[in-house]
Image (cartoon, rainbow, N blue to C red; front, side, top):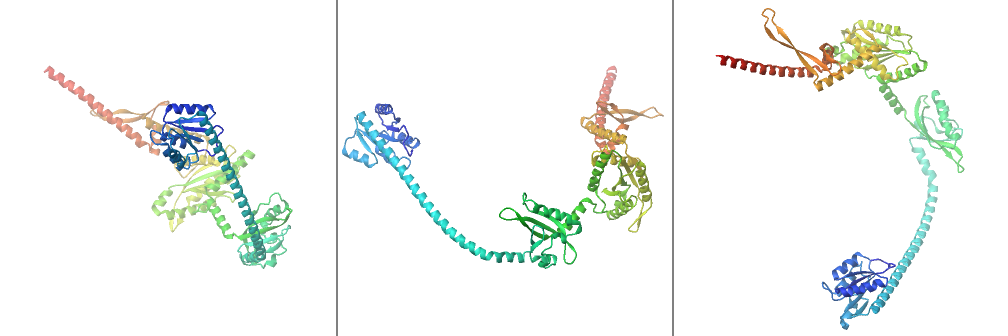
Length: 580
C-alpha cells in the first residue's frame, strides 16, 4: 500500500451484485476517483495486495467469504492494514454494525443506500486518511530530526573526548619520540645519515661503526665523495647534487657505488636519498639510507658474465658475438666500407671422439682447441663458441679477404698437429666458412646465416678445408630449400611415377624381370630425373616415403599384369578347347 494518497485516490469496490458494482464505480469515477471493482473476497484480497489502494467499499454478503473475514484478513497483513474499509450491506441489525467496527471497519452504510451519502462518507474517510498520512509523515520527519540532532550531539561529544585523548597522547608521544627514534637509529642495521645542502654529513647513525668501521664523529663535516672510489666520484656527485638543486622533483633517488672502509677496502653501498624540505618548501638538506650490497653486486656481475660466456671454454657465447656484430654493422653502414670478417669453424669427426673416448675427453678437446684458436688471432679479435663443436671467430677491422684467408690457413696448420688430451694423442681437422662483413647486412642473423652456408659447403666438399661465402651459395641454398618444400608437397600429392626397364639375359634373350625407376612429375617443371632430387631425399629422410609410394605402385602394377595375363591365358585355353 502507498504511504501517501496519490493525487487521484484509488477506491476498491467489492460487491457480488454486478448492478451495485457498476453503479458505485460509475459514480465514483464521475467524482474523479480511480476505481477497481471485484465480485469476490478472494479477488479483493489479491487486488489490495498487488495495487496501491486508498479506500475499500466492502459488501458483507459475498459468495466465497463474508466481508468480515475479508476485513480481518486485510487488517492482519501489515501491507494492507492501514487501508480504511467502509462496509456496504443490507444487514441493518445493530450487532452487524458492531461486528463491522470490531473487525476494523471505519464506517457502515446500509443498503439501499443513497449515492450522495456514500460519496460524502467516501470523501470524509479519504480526508481523514490524507490527514492521518500527513500526520504520520510529520511524525516520521520529526523523529528523524530528533535522532539526527541526538546523533550530532553524541558525535560532537565523542569528538571532544577524542580530541582530549589525542592531545594527551600527542603530549606523551612528544615526550617519548626522541628516545624512541634514538633507539631505532642506534640499533638499525642500515646506515642513516643527514646531510646539509653542500652534501656534508650532519648526522651519522651508530651503525656506521659495524658497517664501515668508522666512528660516527669521523664522518661529521665530510662528504660522501671524500670516501668514494675514484671511478665513482663523478657519478655520485651528479646524482646527489641534482635533488639538492631543484625542488621540482623531490622523489627519492637510489644509486649504487663503492665506499672506502676504515680498513681501506671498498664496499658496494646502495643508498636511498631524499631531500628534506622546510615549511616553505625549500630544501634544507638530504637524508640517506645505505646498506651493504657487495655480495649482490658480485652475484649480478657473475650472472652477467655467465649469460655472455660459454660455461665450458669461458669464451664469449653466441649472444655476446651477436651484440658485437650489431655494433659492427652500424659502423659499416655509417662508413660504407667493409669492416670485419667472420670465420665459422666446425671440428671434423668430433662425434667419433665423443663416441670412442667419452664426452669428458671431448670437452677437454674443445677447451684445448679454444686455446689454440685464440693463439691464431689478434687481441682485438673475438673467438666465441657457437655451440657443440662449432666456433666463430670475429676479425675486427680487416682490410680485405686475404687477411681472413690467412687466419683460416693458420688455423688449419695449427689443427694439423696432434693434440694430447689425458695422455691420448688426438688428430683433428676443421671445416671453415669465411664471410666478409659489409654495409649490405641489416642484422647479425643474416651474417650467421651466410657464414653457416659457407661452412656447409666446406663440409659437403670433403671437410678439412675452407670455403668463402658468395651470393651464388645463398641462391643455391634458397633453391635447395624450395626443392625440399616441393619434394614434401610431391609426397603429399603423390606426384611420383614409376617407369619399368626390362632386364634381359644376353645369352638366351630371355626376359628375367623389370627394374622399377622413379620419376617426379612436377606440375610446373615437368618430368624430373632422380639425379636431381634423390640425394636431397636421402639427406632429409624423405626417401622412405618416396620408396613406400613406388613400392605400392609396383605392387599395383604387378597385380594388373597378373589379371591381364590370366584373362589372356584363359581366352587362349578356351580357343584351343573349342578348336579341339
